[in-house]
Length: 251
Image (tube, rainbow, N blue to C red):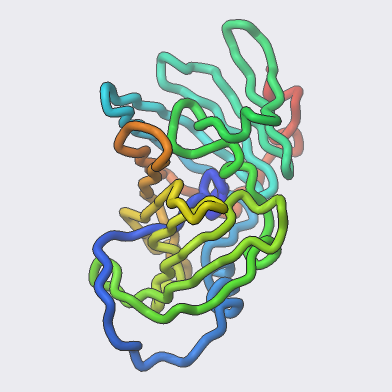
């Protein structure tokens, strides 16, 4: 979860776009804009409660969870809603495991499963496993500025530079004042739009602005997207040494 967990990392987003002239702000390179966003959204550790509302079209699923993460490298997620009580995820770098309490079984998420939606949501396991800086996987170009829901936003075009990049191309809108991602579009090699995400709420925590409510829609499946909302957020909280271990996952 990036940008937040990249579960969060997730995380880029907005609404109605209207083209307008550039605002009287300093000219920045794409790399500088991404670095400012990273500085704003990066954390040592984070702990929070969250809900996922998954609209499948014919029915709506509600998930509740508690999450602890260390930067974008490690995350521990436990679901607490009745249907999924005790289901847990552990992410360490680019590996992920899932624990099923009824079967008391642990499964490593790999291969074709990485393309599947986490707990039936529009967020794939591949999205959640994304690590590192966008610049490591993409070239970046500034396309200009647009207005997104009344706010000036830098528009960036990202082209994959590595075969391991989850998307061939991404288009990002980044708040030009707060330096928080507010909208994103992800494209396949065919140039087809395959996923779209937008931030619905941003809150201020001390000197940082942080996205707390987002919507993600997988364009390749039926349904109306997944809304992910974070509450009770704590940054840079001390964590137990055994937080991110397989032993804890299966306790």
